[in-house]
Image: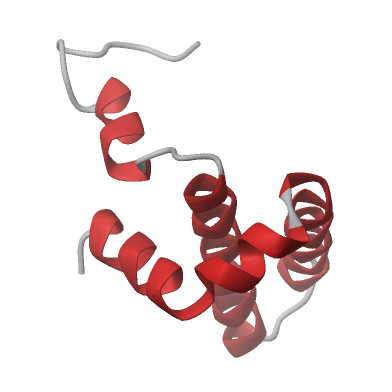
Length: 87
């Protein structure tokens, strides 16, 4: 599945509710999921790590959707113009 397909899936399922929640509250949910991922990374439960990575990606897509950002296009900064090194 491409990033754009996953982002569209999240949009189809949750966009109306996500827009009503708004960016600040959605960002807080995203940060909560990042915290849960941090906790999972400190442990040994591989299934939980996988679930938390998926949750973080889903909430990132939600934020992108309600702020009109195409994540796949945004990621082109890493795949176009012979990117070398790190920022």
